[in-house]
Each structure stands twice: as structure tokens, then as C-alpha cells.
Length: 355
Ligand code: PHE
Image (cartoon, rainbow, N blue to C red; front, side):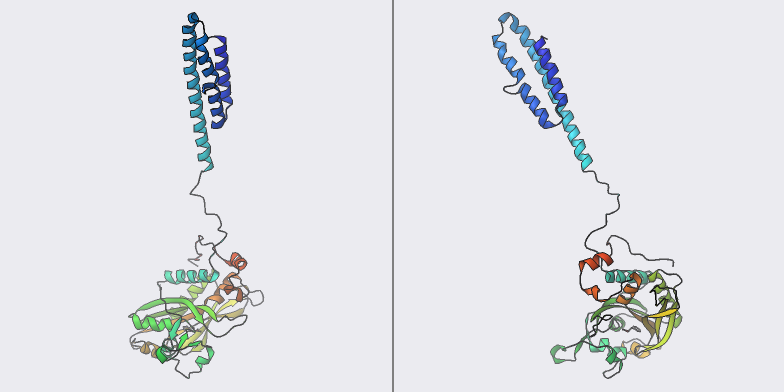
């Protein structure tokens, strides 16, 4: 190969090595093999070469052309491979990494409490029952042994709604207890259900909201005793609050639909708000053995079946468990409050099993 061809070969190799990406590579390609490229120019000049040298020069040029084309293609392949590797590295995704904290779409503390109650009672064999927010007067009161002029009605601050077709007024349910009525009327005993849901009372101040949440419980079987009631609620409260030694006290009380009735208190420190110790008591839920008249009202023979029921306020339990001081922001949909008190939907609920 003559000197000028050797120079072209050396310079092309150097330019290809220096081309760091496909764009630089293409510039080199055009500068050598393009219409006005250096090699193309040399080939065009072949015609001016004296005939006696033309053969040899032509063969050398062809050899050089093959060598340069090969080198240019090889460089392209290398650059394309490197570009693909870089892209794959940039797009690398590790599906085994834990999810990042989600900045929006958190679970409301009340929903979280409802989920936890459902999970804890579910583990004890309770199914979940539901009823409508707008109830018949009989389901909410009458069947539960609260007739028309019973004094217990006065405690409920009921929202009354017009009856259908001029019939008896309907109510926004004042507690979840009408789900007891519905369950007993539609399912044969034995029964073991909870009923979490919305409830309404015409009461509005710092500690009362006209809409709030309760969770009802109902167990009906042949040999259910007060001992079952106590064991069930002690287990639930200790699991819910995650305190194995949480003191629980049963105090005689009155509800028209249970006999005997008991209010349930948990131990806490009134000054610090700390649960589980401190010598003070905090009322947390109502309970009792289902009144025989309620069983009979709902078509269950009280000589054959008995059981217990309980009802608790979800807001109260939530505020105590998570140290939320004020009830009103629960319903204000303030995104800052939700960010502070909300729960990551991907984090599993704490169940404190085995407590
Ligand atoms: N329904 C009662 C209330 O709202 C609570 C309760 C339910 C009490 C079941 C005893 C049995 O206060």
C-alpha cells in the first residue's frame, strides 16, 4: 500500500476510535465513504492515474475500501452495543425493593380502625354484617326493646325522616344495633357477627359529631355465658391496643336490649393519656347478654338460644390508640391532617397476634 493510503487508513482508525457515539461515528463514515469522502475522492482520481500504474493502484484502493468499510461497521456494532448497555443500566428496575412511601392516597384512621376490628374479630371467627344508614323505627328501636315513649329514646337525639307513603317515620340509625335485628331476622342461629358502620345523632360539639362510627358485635348460641362475653372483649381490647396487660373492668349498667348490661372500662393515666397503667378508668364500650325479649322480637326462641352483644365507638378507640386529640378534623378532609395521621395502604395492619 502506498504512503497516502496508509495515512488514510491510520487516520480513519484513529477517528473511529475517537468517535464516542453514533453521531460522531456517522461523521467519520461520511468523511471517508460519503459522496465527497476521502476514499471516494481517491477512487474518482483512479481514472487520472497513468495506465501502467492503474491496475496496481486500483487493487490497492479496493483493498483499502474493504478494510475501511469493515472497520467502520465494526465500530458501529460496538457503539450500538454500548448504547444498549447504557440504556439497560439506566432502566434497571429491582422488583424486590420495598415500595417507597406513597405521598398521597393514605388510609383514613377510621378506615384503619375498622379494618383492624374486622381482622381481630375475624380471627375469632366473626363474620361481618351490614345494614342501611336509613332504618325503620322498629329495627332501630322497637325490636331492641325501646318502645315509642321509652326514656332511652331521649338519649339518642334521633334524626327522623319522613316515612314511605305516609307510613311510620324512618330514622338515620342511632347505633349499629339494628344490624343485630336484621341478622337475627334473616339468619338462623348460631350467629357470630360484627357490624362496623356509620351512625348518626343530632349532637355536635368538640367530642360529638352528628355522624360517627360504631362496631356492633353479636354472638348467639345455646350455651353462651357472661364469661364468653368477658373473654371475647378482653382479648379484643388487648389485641387492638397492643397491650398484653391492659386492665379491663366490667361495670354494671343499663341498656334496654341487654340484661344484664355492662359498660367496659380500660385502665389509663388520666393526666398523661397513657393507656394500660395509671390507676384511672376510661369507659370504652357497652355490652350485655341479649335480652330474651329482643331474641323473641327477632324470631329466636329465648328458651333455646342466648348470647351477648356489644357496641363500641370507632372514633373514640381511634383517638385513644393513635393519640389523636381532637374529633372534629376526622371529617374536615384536610390533606395535612390526613398526611399526618393517615396510613400507608401498602403497610399491613398491625394485629398484635398472640398478645
Ligand atoms: N347500642 C349501644 C350504644 O349505642 C351499645 C351497645 C350495643 C350496648 C350492644 C349493649 C349491646 O350505646
